[in-house]
Amino acid sequence: MKKVLEIKTGETIVFRHLTKSDVDGVWNNFNEVINEGLYLPVLFPVRSQLEKDSWYHNIKNEKEICIVAENTALKRPYNIIGQCEISNSNWDAAAHVGTLGIIVKEKYRNLTIGRNLIDLAIRESKRLNNKEKIVLSSFSNNQRAIHLFTELGFKTIGVRKKQFLMDSDYIDEVLMELWIDDSFILGEL
Ligand SMILES: CC(C)(COP(=O)(O)OP(=O)(O)OC[C@H]1O[C@@H](n2cnc3c(N)ncnc32)[C@H](O)[C@@H]1OP(=O)(O)O)[C@@H](O)C(=O)NCCC(=O)NCCS
Image 1 (cartoon, rainbow, N blue to C red):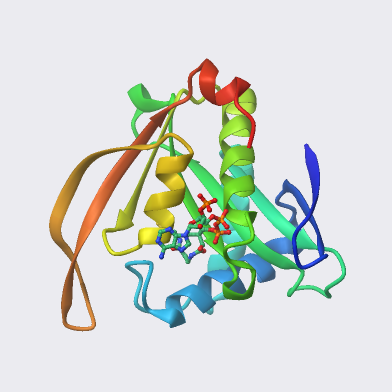
Image 2: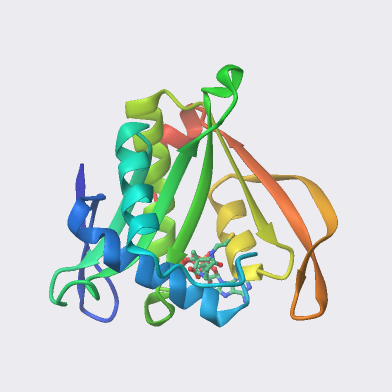
């Protein structure tokens, strides 16, 4: 799977499956978002190469989906400008369910990279892993993410009140899910 998109800045972005050489770029993006301190319930960046590499091997061993967005004009690791992962459930009886996580580098937000990453990751998780349902969660104040998930067909199925404590503020967690039906597969962005 490969998709090429020209965004409104004139840059060409390639969407494709994760490879080993993307690992540093993906983790740089993750650590940047952690340092923003606004979007994910993780307080410390990941520095350990062992941890980064074992994440990659786990994805490949478990045949999980990770789609990356690459700006081929940039040098590694800065070429990876976003990523969307759909991981497997730990429960045997929930093999049809995937859990979605997504990050786009700050400079590239609001340029449809997120929309494309999510759309492709869901299609690939259905095609390759027979996923039928995708679940995720978001901070309730992450209006851009909730807007995008809703636009793509996710429904809010609950809210965990005061689930996270970030910098002395409690934050609610919004739980969302999507059943991957024909309207999603036949739909276009
Ligand atoms: C959330 C995120 C993945 C979205 O990716 P993106 O590339 O910025 O998203 P897109 O450009 O495809 O779409 C953004 C949408 O949100 C809308 N939007 C932007 N700011 C908004 C706001 N404050 N409130 C509501 N909607 C907003 C845009 O108009 C666009 O919607 P549209 O296509 O209907 O016009 C990205 O912004 C990001 O990585 N954020 C930080 C990390 C994060 O929040 N991860 C998700 C954790 S659950």
